[in-house]
Length: 478
Image (cartoon, rainbow, N blue to C red):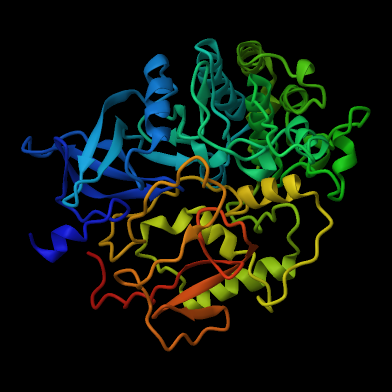
């Protein structure tokens, strides 16, 4: 067997690789536990591409759960599950995969920046996402990661589709995570989820069970950011402004006060989705009907663009970041070209944790958070909207080496530091201030202290492999 074949990595399969009956065209993006490839059926010639999501870990139970949930949902605003199977690596390991409709288009926030939608258009888009959630909840499922990055506006017809059910759950599914809070993205978590983490801080076995009302709240956060360009106040206990989410709190400032162009019915429905009391939010189906009715009945003022310029918005900071720190972290990434443009795992939580690197990585940030709350925040640490990032077709170099799925008892702990560097990993000298030389390789130190999540643990610190910056292409793309 050739070495190149043996070193095939599920996170960076080259074009032409066969995965079951499917042939890889290019990489479409990556999340924490899987990479999405644009593929076609092998031997069929040019045809309609499909999205193939391949696990990073052998026999990852998340994929069976996602397949079970998607197989229950049959809705025009959710990509259809077309096929599922296992890709057998030359080593003998079996990696599960799912095949779904390929959705070409723009993420929700990118669509807003480029198309400058009106309140009426936003009402219709939100109604479509709410209908997708209605069907999900009707079959006993919850998405658990509703956000702008997981809503795509399809180029062909302008339809909104809810993507990435990898964090989802359904009635009867076995638990796969062992943290206080289920998978999710920090700014989109409901106040009741954060309150649970705070109130059960001394109960390490306590687990929050996400409800349909959590999905509705996340949709409200997505809508709020869509029309105002910023998140509502943080719901994390102790954060500035979090008191608005207390049981007697007033809730977030109305979107209309931040953007006067927001139509009044849209403003009211967003505030309803963000109600402090989960029972006041309403079900997804009820909200969908109200959104649809508002889109049809509102006056001509709802046809004015919500945004007045196509100029890119200023970066939106997630809770706990200061502008200086946010800028410094991004500059560090640019200077080092950490993981490069060519790594499909660019959107992984491990890289997101790198954004939290401070000027002096040897000095951990002081915190008075409870262990459970700190763990929950560390779990969410990442790019501001996380999830699978769409990437342009590109030739991928070595990606993170294949790992073994941690056992349930090990999840939430750091991965063991490998005895030798991964293929393509930076070798000494390790010149960057945030790098450390460990076992013959260069490793990027994260701000997070052990226990680590989706990164490698060494002497109480968390690391990801450093990779050399890619060489610039010698010719321009045609």
